[in-house]
Length: 322
Length: 314
Image (tube, rainbow over all chains, first blue to last red; front, top):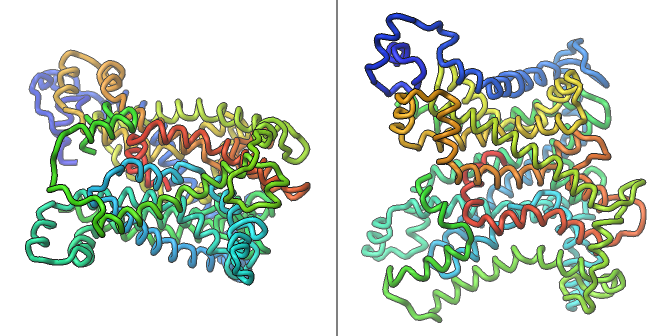
């Protein structure tokens, strides 16, 4: 803190930029204690400090530490090294969870970015009824994953849903029952997830497109560049920060995917649509195997860290120094 | 973050539309209405819109049919005779396990959770944001950084330590415990929202109040609060939809007789025993989705602003 000198001269205004001289004499007569300066603000921040330190920092560390123990029903502090992690990666259910997360994650990222950008580009053509279209594209985002999962469970129902309708139109061998076919069940979840989430991507992308200078468009029109090439080679590279931020936001949401699977498939058929977050919950609160739950949640933390840390470094680390 | 002034005027989506149409001729030379470009453009948009509307349509249609009609027809056909019986059953007599008093219990549980959670989380976060914006102290930014990083940590990592904490305090499984949990996990995004808003207010106002001798709480209550109605509305939209849609905390931190609506809905629809009544299920699903949908359609553009800031919450 380089502003410490000015800050001590005027107790209270800690914003650092002020330079009123009226409080100079007061500081000379009564130099307040470091701890009690700005006391009200510190008292008001106690909840925030508690949450940040005790829950976010302390809780995370606690879980990571206890993932190295053989806790079962209750947390115990007898350390067993990496045993829980070996057991975790030997469990078929965890391996399937991770595979599902990888498939769901990669496809979800590609499709939601592509569809979101396409919709945003269409919306950016100075269309009429823009508000109506935006309202329609975004309303699924207001719904919970539980509602989303249950609706799509019904639409994909093989007896009454899409499959039976296509069959009744004459294509009698048509098969599309993702919720009962363990090899494609994760794509059924993907369809529901995309329906819920692309509206948000579209909104973020639209904000990015509106931030592009109008002159860029004028210049490319003067040069006679077709519109799709302008988008592909000029606008998208210019929107790189928007893409990266959106990517991080969706990706860290994907790692948490839980309710959607619980509602739509309950992890089934069998264990074909399990995801890591569900593994954690089941082992912590149902199988009474805390150690596995802690190890699995630590792996989730690691996944998020791999996504978020490089981004946070690029986004915030550079600016502060610059 | 720039168009704060427009927030007050766009109370309803309709106003915005009429305002835009009424602003007189502007922009490029008008094109022919039925050009090839327009057909493709609007064609694509309408196809996409139909895809997004389809599930809502299916929900409404299915919830108004009787079971015999569902077994015969397809899910997209409109009901031949409209019945509201499934709605009544979903609300008042659908079964979860042993008790058969429908979704109404879950609804009131959710309301009981929602109201205090929204009030407490916004109160705490607004004061924290205010302290961070105007009364920074040594180390305050460090705590704030931890908070923002914490927004990305999967909830599953922190759930068990919180269970232990609440159990030690003797409030695990109670309403108070759940309110605390919602306050904790709402804090990063709300604090960010309020901090950014209070920072954007002119600093001269704050300084003038300081010179007049106002203290921490006085400035907050008399100057900051009256000026920040829009951001409080945004925060409320964010929290109401977020807490209403929550499932994980409801399962972990409440007892079965006080499960929120989402948990009860899932239990009703995915219960294994008995004949599946799809019309009742869809009515129940619609009832659960109704609250956030109403908030969404009423709040219009404010909702977009809320999620743009709240997207981090995921």
